[in-house]
Image (cartoon, rainbow, N blue to C red; front, top):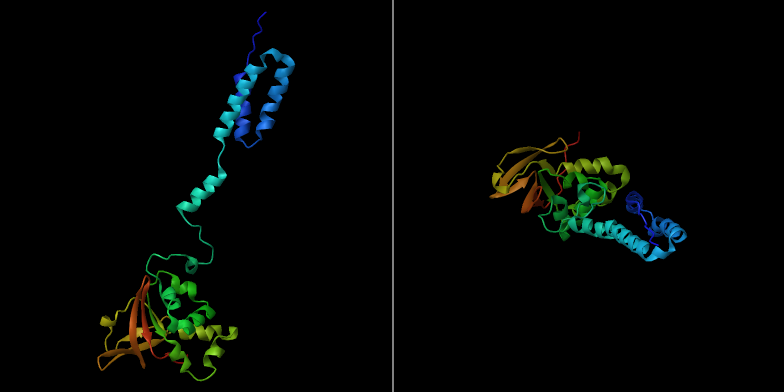
Length: 229
């Protein structure tokens, strides 16, 4: 005597959808196995085949999260929070801050920029012209001046001095003219002089120039100080 078994497609579809939703495969197929054994033991092979097909379909439909994470990391690096300064880029031309960081002659300037909390501001698009005093220029200041300015309670005074070394815009050496007055970021004015064919800003000589992705750095041999407000 033949016994006909009818497999409800909607039931299998329901189990398949549950598998996609994240339920374990054993939770999906166990009720089918128990029900089948109780009703039609002689057709166990047929039912197990259907179960294996459904399980294989379920496994094929799962998202491999580890592969997804790997692919995302290959497509682009997630940048940490903290502003433009935290962006890692070893290929493109460096901005004015990173140029200074890479110079052994400007470690004091870098420390001062960090203490004044100006790293992110100077890492933005700008463009900026930065007149960057060397370590020797800072050392020439009266004893204790630099250490005093680096104290937290002198942050505003330090920022004012540093911003007096920054012009908003790009000034190449060739564009500097004798007597030219520059409005600096801190609100004060600085004057360009040409002495013996060499450019100066106030009484500081420009000894070198380095282009950057967001402007240009002119290395100077003195710290220029703003007029008292």
